[in-house]
Each structure stands twice: as structure tokens, then as C-alpha cells.
Image (cartoon, rainbow, N blue to C red; front, side):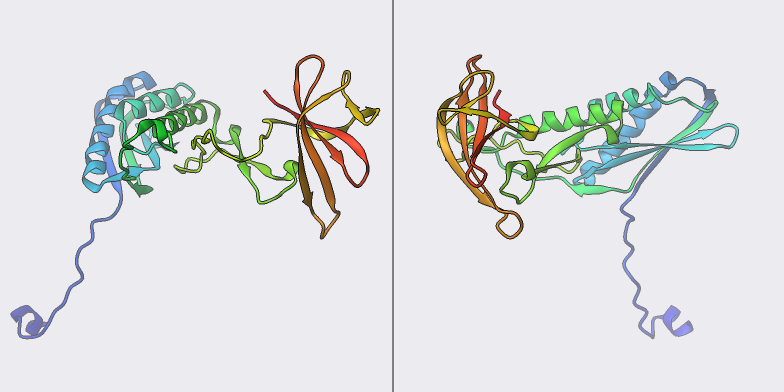
Length: 275
């Protein structure tokens, strides 16, 4: 030890690493009893967080607010986030919206903000030709802002979204999952006008409806006029083979239907509607 102190013996030390966390606190001279009185302390803590994130070039994925009561009790309020950049005004609005459904357990003598979940800010280049861009970033940003508002008001377990599955049969090609906060998982990509992808309806029936047939023509509230098709889907040969010819058809009332002919069972079915 003496040799290390005198410098005659090597004494390597690990470099100090600043912890990747943020913590700030506001203590009040008087007790706050209403959630509306927390507006300015919350705004001040968000200012400190914004400065920290700019230095780190990070984005926080969750804000953990801690309420310390004069009775000694402690309560935490979490606010998940999905934005790709820090917007103090928007975050303040979300927090005030969250407080509308949050009841304080008593007088508050201090408020703290703690953040541990961070991601690097996504860097991107501007499009040279705005009309030809494949990804609408502004639209995606508005979606994330709307998602945060809805989840703040309704709860994270009340929102769902459809995701694509690697299945050929239309009824199995998508699944329902909780709306995600991860940027980029929501599809805001625009379809090119020259796309060769076949048209798909947004509304599929829970189960395909068997149609009546007259003179080899399907009927649904009257005869259906076949406008486009067929599109052959041949799948599940390793389980129970499905061979279908899909058509876009027009009903007498003007509705655009998605129908198919089961090539194995020799029958017509209604599977969905176009908007």
C-alpha cells in the first residue's frame, strides 16, 4: 500500500463511468395538496431532463415520477413514451393528462423524476425529393404522439394493433398485439403507385360466409359482378390443403366484396369488404 501511495509500484484504477441514469428532485417549502399545483415543478424537472438528454443525445422511454408525502409514504407514477425526440411541451401535456386520473394520497412535500430507460436519438437525412419519399416521418411522429395520448388516457392494455404474420391464408396473415412504443414498428410507409401487390380489404369477416350460387355466379343480396381476379392462394398442403381463387366483386348495392371460390370444395365464399 505504501509503495502504491509513493508511486513506486503500479496502481491501475478503473475509469469512473457516469451512471446512465437521470435523477432530479424538487422539495417544497409548503405542502402541495392538489395535482394542479404540481404543474410548475413538473415543468422544471422536464427542463433538467431535456438538458441531460441533449448532452447524451438520448431519448427517454419512460418517466418515473416519485411523490413523497409528508406522512412518509411514497408513490410512483410511470409514464411510458414513444417519441423519437424530446418535446417538453408535449411531455408536460401528457403528464398533466395523466394527473387527471391520479389522486394524491395526501400533502406532497417533494417530487422527483427518475429515468433509466434510454435510447440513442435516431439520425436521419432529409429527402431530396419530398414527393418520392418512401417513409413519411412527420406522419409517423403524429402517430406516436397520438399513441402516447391514448395510452395515457385509456391505459396501455386498452390499445391494440395488427401485425403481419408469415402466413399465406388471409385469416392467418395478421395477428392482434398490444400497441408498441418502439419507434419504427408502426408502418407509415407509403405504397408506390406502381406497386404490383394485390389489393386486400381492411375488413375481413370473422369466418368466411358461404354464398349461394346460380348459373355459376355467386350471390350476396343479389348476383355479384366479378371485377378483378382470380388470384390463386394455394397453402397449408402439409396440414389441410386450401386452394382458393379470390375475386373483387361488386354487389347490387355498390359494395365492393372480396370473394373466393374454394377449388377443392367447389363453393363460393364471402371473405371481406373494401372501404
